[in-house]
Length: 188
Image 1: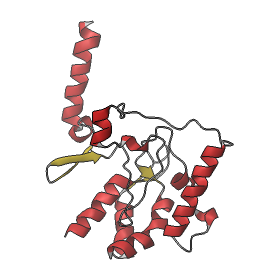
Image 2: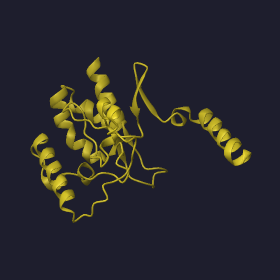
Image 3: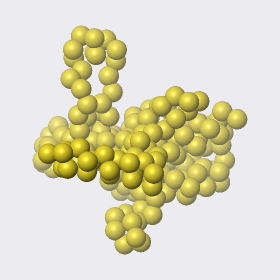
């Protein structure tokens, strides 16, 4: 019990804090010394001046203080909706999201919308979108912020994570990091 329950976890924690301190602390995002999120967990960005991430089946665990005090908020959760592709509720939600996206991004054809803009991840907490999904949003974010499309493209490129070891997974843009760069640019 001492080895597996105490010594091993403490040793791994110590090693990870030395080797990769930011990751060992949860990859926290700080602004003016205050923790405002994590690069590992998505957030719901609704303003036009920010890039929008994937939909979340658990709404990224957002809650109001009233929900917390009345007990309506039951704590952190993760997961998908578990609705089948033929489920009418899922199809209705996807169609609604597609219509909203097309309104915000005129000139985009429905078939050009990447699926990650319409489909939640398995955890419901994914902070990533495809580079194509980010590229589609550049013109509208530029219009809302006044930041040039050239600068926004550079930000997207900077926040694009490549495949692990060049072969595993897909390239992805971390929306939390990207929107922090947008916010920093607007704050200057």
